[in-house]
Length: 550
Ligand code: CA
Image 1: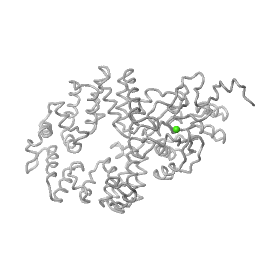
Image 2: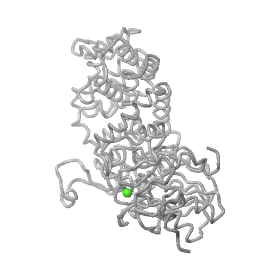
Image 3: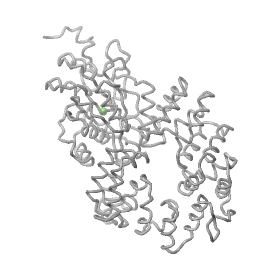
Image 4: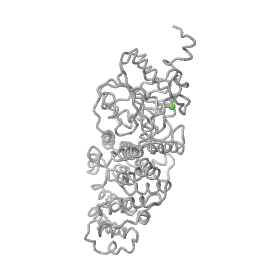
């Protein structure tokens, strides 16, 4: 039946994406399409988890950061205490690939919040800034936002005084500087009063290293905390490898405490591995392979594989799936990205290693284990990956070469492995069937996605496709930046048509892959939800929403 000309021009059932749906408060996205503005708190969560490093297809890093900072400021103004609690919650649970956005927002709370917010933000410092590097980042950021008042000095001082001397000694030898900041700088600014003799000695060593005689003495101090620092000083001037190995083993010295010339020695890495923190182990798989420690069938390989499959260890160290994915990409190459080589051929000539399939499989498991445990929803799910041009630009969490497009495939894989009844497609302005399966390894899934052609963006396509093919779907999951503009019907309208014509109260989850302010989810429709890509809680939230428990 031909449409009336008035209906063609004005219909709430079917509106071209480059016009707003009549009667709604839609906003124009960066691609010229109309979508909804995301709730400021969801926007904050996107920033805390995805950050703005590297920018996006539509916004340079600076613009994307400013846009997010403006939203943070708005949230602080409306409820500063809630902002602090979001920051602490996400940071503590390790839901974000990087802690920097959390530190940035905490610094904003400490600078621009009302009295209560500033106090609570400063009190939360040790919960968010858990290692020396975080503290330096905080000092650097907050300095650009406010003066060094008493409250701030006291908070920095308490970071040191509230830390047990043994842990503090480890912190100061492992995390010695960042962006030009050292413990000497922060300690001189804060000038805290030591709570015990060990702290007093450590503070003295930090500010006047040469004058701390105990640290350079021939025999070690009695205090275990001070002995750690003594061992650090000792290893700096040690020339005998056996003595170096003994110091590493006896005092659990981390890699960062060693002069770099030792780090090409396989025996040194062998001594480091047993007490190596998980983050360091995952980050140094390539190095340990290059120096010859991680060899097929070696004890080291066995130990690494066991630890990668240890959910508790991963959780305790707050290992994020992105860290695992990033390590997998470097390790899989088989040659070091560092050094002078610029071409593939030159790199191949550098000392390399043969990536072990067992380690890659273990990394694949670690990736999945690093997400919060997911209970399957047992619903019919259609997973739809936006593979349009904009999803192929920018990077996730500052990992070079990891695009939102790759990221969405990785996210979808977690749900594919949980849900018994899923169907997966990719789309840009057209639907593209995908051959990837839940049994495939992560790196291969990403490889497959890379081969797909780019195109315009039509986020209504998944619903139209399911309707056209009479595919029963309880929950659509769309991984996108919500920069949709191409189609003649809005995603929300396509979902409504799907619900009516299929007689299924289908839901839709938008997995936001960029920290922008747009969403295709209508905030007034209870059947639509926004979650954040690479939130370790996202697969669980998707499943809970599909079960009608969110
Ligand atoms: Ca796009």
